[in-house]
Length: 112
Length: 113
View 1 (cartoon, chains in turn brown, cyan):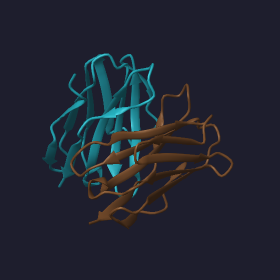
View 2: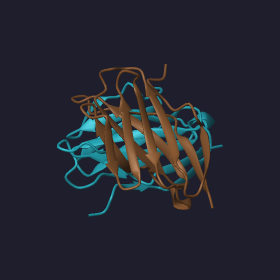
View 3: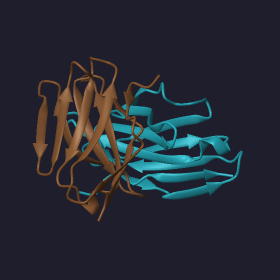
């Protein structure tokens, strides 16, 4: 059973609009959440993260929201740019385990 | 400092052959992870090490897979014998215990014919 789910395998958004990527998890013990971006033929690169003691973290065009009661994480990109086209993975982590569990990824395409 | 280094970048082999993937973590990082990426399962954790000691290998799919970390700057993932269903991209990642982020290498694309 998957502990971390990204139910949308793909998403297309017009340049300049908002991209919203979603992630659901099952275990309330997870206390740190990350988003990674992956371009073809490259490894995933860290984008933004949030601790379970917060519900929002912002870094430039990227904002991550955490809804602990719903066990839901989302990444907002505003405004979206063609260079944001990539696969986005959410990852969860429990302090003390040092073990990252990843979702299956969402392929974002930003149309110029 | 260089990032995580993996070799080879691409490997094509025939079923039954032994395959060895290599990883050099970022200097000073004391955790090393091996992941496998497939379309169906996304990024799966195979095994991770702390200070060169394997901590959790519950993700290793079968006895055909083995991983070692003989020193702080080198790790290998070996598949023997390889099978077509092992075809995937294998990533190595490392992190410092005082941080929260794992840094990934560029991956090795393995094709088993």
